[in-house]
Image (cartoon, rainbow, N blue to C red):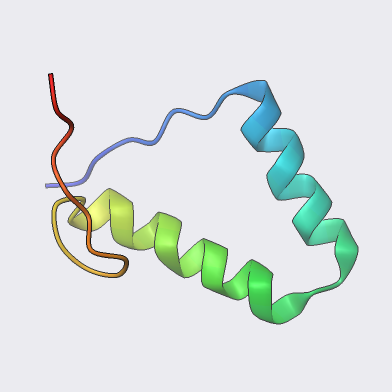
Length: 53
């Protein structure tokens, strides 16, 4: 099962700024994190937790 990530315009702009900055290490980490979120959002890097109501 794969999940879909929906980005706001602000987050899209932030991702583009990181990409244009030339910081390849940071951009690679960001891509890895986003890819991980689409596969298994409840586990993995960064100690994810469920949203509270």
